[in-house]
Image 1 (cartoon, rainbow, N blue to C red):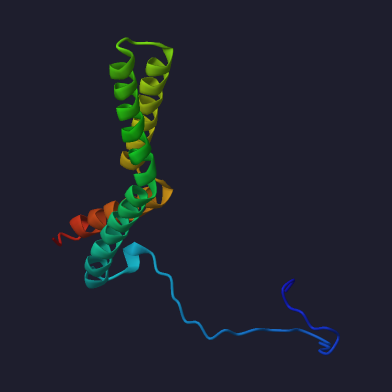
Image 2 (cartoon, rainbow, N blue to C red):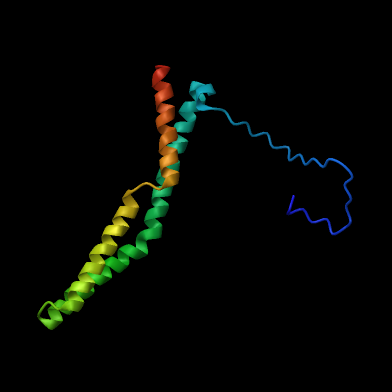
Length: 132
């Protein structure tokens, strides 16, 4: 109730109940019908794909920076005609940045792990019911 601002105009002398008329029922997967499970599994799998696409979109600047650093190191080495400290540092930085970007893309985040666990749970329940 900390967000409720009454400015001294509303006086409540007892219980104050707020009903939002939402009727969202939460059921455990074990209590869902086969049809509900079969409908929810593609939805969860779609969420995983959407999250993966968002991760790739978010990491595109790092991919571009990696490519720029690789080309900059190669051009610098070609221009200087030898390998020096700046070439090694630029190459190392681009390799590190590329590896970290790739790792962040491939490793599932917390949301993807939760959704994958839900898909696995649904599949397990359907397999136990001999549906599929």
